[in-house]
Length: 382
Image (cartoon, rainbow, N blue to C red; front, side, top):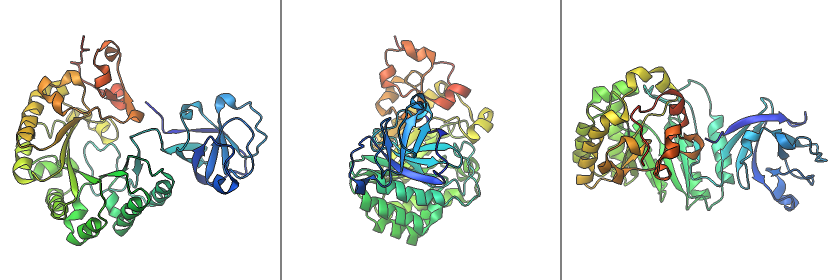
């Protein structure tokens, strides 16, 4: 597990507020390119860099610079091209983008019009539009060689036209970068908004939209919002009308597993034009922890229901993936759909995994699952 937040152990008093900086290890950059950069190293810094960062173990190094910020060792992975926010007021450093990772996602807002039982990012009724402003800044710093970037919330489309502007900006800045947007899809029930989004003509943008049941009452209960099902379905239909890429996401728990095969049949008969379906294990964060006894069902206990649903999707030729599961708790026939999916910054393994011959193929666990609950049927492959 990689920590994306760490402490600023020490920094001069003149460094105040927040700075979003790109990390560099090149001390010999031309002065014109030093602005907006944080130099990573223990040697003295020539003028022009906005900050120099060193780590706690190097704190006794005399840098000869008055702009040195000493960070906790937990951020010692920082390297060339990473983007960070230094919050000097609260003495915290935040990693916003890692150039070496394929799992970069920007949080755009914590506001949401859902209140999902298993939400890993519980909604807050606050003005956090600074996150959107920050996203524009981060996107402007990301290398054009970046393969993929994600946007999540909360519900990003609550920004309305500003959300559209961000997608257009991202396309302009990163024309060859795939984009994954997590959204509940309800805003796209508005045909004019969908037209605006489609007019961007992004070459590779996936919208990940949750659908938890073919029964509107169950879906609305899971997301804790009236009429959410109807708007979600209309949103999906509108997006596909304008040939946008849609992924349907299903989090598997006690309220969604019993009718999973019915949902599979519904999708294959009515939404077979979607581009991908993701069947996902629980992440033990946020509301999942509070509702865990109500939500939890051991993945081993629903492995046959998972296989039945996958059989339906595969028979219809609908591309389907199993995310956030361990190989030892799914049936052999489900492995063709299995994806090692958990982001490296929140991934972990338990002791049983140490002797497993297939560990390298397995996605392991969310670190939060290790702390709270995981399958009691786990068994290493020998």
